[in-house]
Amino acid sequence: MHLLQRQDILSFYDVPQVFTVRDEVDTLYLCVLAELGEEADKYLCVPVSNGRLARVVGGQLDLREVFETPESGEVFEGTAHNGDLRQLETRPLPPGAIPQQWLPDPGFFVDVEPALDVEIVEQARTRDRAVIHYTLTPPESAEEPKIAVTHLSQAITRFQKVVEWAYRKAMPDTDAGFAEEIRLPENYQLEVFAFSPGSFTVHMQTVARADLVGFSHVARALDILDAVNHEAQEVEKAVELVARYGGHFATQYKNWLRFIIDNDIPVAYEWSMPTRHYSTRTDVRPREAKPLYQALVRRKDIGQEVKKLVGVLTKVDANSGTWRLRDDQGRERTGHWETSSDVTLAGLVIKSKTYEFICEERLEEEPATGREFAKLYLIRYNEI
Amino acid sequence: MADERNPFEWVESLPPDCPPTDAEPPDNREFFRLVGTIPPTDHDFDSNRKLRPGQPLGPDECMNRACSLWNTYQQCENKRKLPTLKMKKVVKLMLPPESGVILRTHRNSAGHHSWWRAMRFDPCAQWEMP
Image 1 (cartoon, helix red, strand yellow):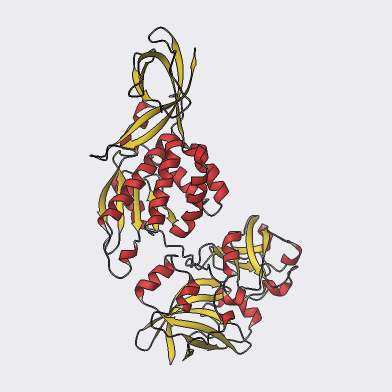
Image 2 (spheres, rainbow over the protein chains, first blue to last red; image 1 turned 180 degrees about the vertical axis):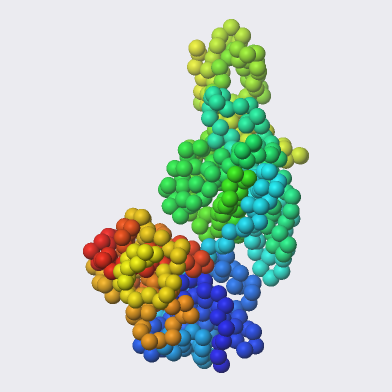
């Protein structure tokens, strides 16, 4: 048998190392260079379905597994004479006859860099907003184009929360030099306006238009997210970057990674805005996300969002474990303390003394509506 | 032979219009390559064409005469899992502008660059352990 038509090179190193070919009856094969010879090179080839190939190209399937557990049970030895891959002669290898040195080592994943999407740049310009293409590759889409509703909704919700908290963290603590309108939620709130046909690429845009020069403020958040994701393989660097912003951003970023890992869904997001003539793409794969997620879970300190309040106590309720503090602007904040903690409010004076409360802000969800709200838990206090 | 467009003398003869016009001097950037021995020999930086003269090889003769480099250590190290590259070692090269020209190629292989080496640059004198 001859494998005639080379399709795509999936890994190149001086010569094609991993590539696909088709035979006379259009069957698709995945081949790996197994041995270089003076007169002939040897290849290991297996028939592969489109679904399995998609998992290889998506970096989800270990290359060794493709050859060790071929879908059809068949493995072929390919021979190319004089380095000429246009004529690859093949012969079947009996089961168990694959020379071990011809197999890739465990842990080799194809690392394909996708072509950038020029449509995004055009969409950002015509819509006058930042545009994000968010691509999901769930396991259920391997054989036919479909996605579980929960996967789609959670993928969008988790991404929106990461963008929101990256945006909030991108705002400096002081108001100096920042107009109030930059702080408006419309800058980071996203809306879906299209899907790419035949895939699960969700087209999103910011609610707010770009400013007069075409700058979309959500870029502040996406730059942070890009920076963290681009360091994902250097786990320690990525953890330090997440720690720099910390708090709710760290929590939401961990939640997003956990969604990707638990559901085995590689995601990619590519974005642009009217001032840019190019787009930026970032891929997050479960296999690469896992070590970073585990490292972030170990660093419990970086998920804590600490808030400092100064004011007079107006109420303490030991039964419900709640307190209320009024600042000098007359704004009242209610919070909790955990009776299991070392914190006790016994002896605090209501309405006549000023206190500094150091609290942890936790994001919680209403069970009925799923609406998110912030809850303050007292860590310690000082009398001022 | 060096000319106005290609101000280098190349380590091997190149076909017309090679290197591509969008290939650029590397400007002291760091790259990684797999070599057979530590220290590497000149042979470790040979193109596929130099290693296999007279054979058909790939259809793009300019690419046959380039040498693969990688952006990051991890990308290069990962290739050591492939059957013909298992025994190789990773070295780092800091390429000055006079080392030749590079171009991002084989976009399906993330981080892959092709390097057309200038005659006067000796990688065996410039390599480092990563």
